[in-house]
Length: 312
Picture 1 (cartoon, rainbow, N blue to C red):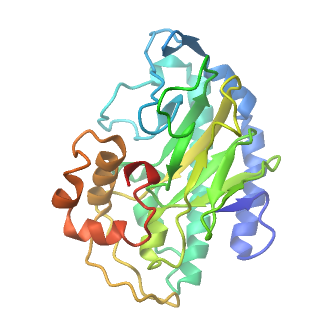
Picture 2 (picture 1 turned 90 degrees about the vertical axis):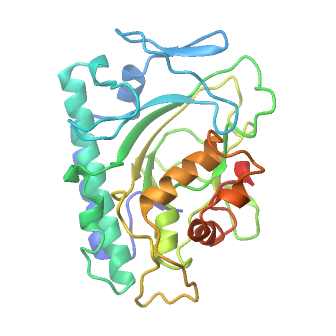
């Protein structure tokens, strides 16, 4: 996990993209304050609701993963989704701001990936086709508005406010003005991620770890109850970059050499299995070793943390 605010060293292409992003994003006026205006979320007993014209419910889930609520903008128009479409909540001006912001996030992601490709001795455009926002391919990149709301008491048997996990996709861009995020270092010690004004937290996801043969690390991270007390709201805005489902996760050759040898796996296989492992809606704990795809097991063993602490 690294901070880019702005990037001052490394690839000159990334340095240029960071400064360009900061200028254009401020011009669009999509700030954390505007996010607060757009996400009026109020606690109502044990269940929380998003205040909006259609009165859609957004439950705070604390069973396994996170005490949070939010909304996501992901699939392109015309694509079928697995849940209700939330675009009718806001007017066209707000939606246009969000879509423009998403496009800038996509552009920054592609610029960063071109730098990773270059250092892996691959063509700079290697990741471009599978990660284009407008490709219209499932699952699509997702921009999420997240609120970790004030609670009257700590939920029973809760792991963390956001339990320790790695991100499933390629890269995550995180926008937040709130402290509380922690990362786990090589010695299994937890370290605070500083909040840099105007900065972006860039987190490497599982797929870059796969493609680099384990040399790039998908960072375990969490939000603890101690760092963000229950009487304090926390807001964040993550952008999750991920490839199309048919993308091959075979480790790539290049200047980053690795001893890892793994059979081919698609992102769709990995994505759906991570959902099952995380939410426990298909496989019980006793069934996981027996039913886990043999190829997938190799990838989950790449680093012991890729399934997340909450499913070990």
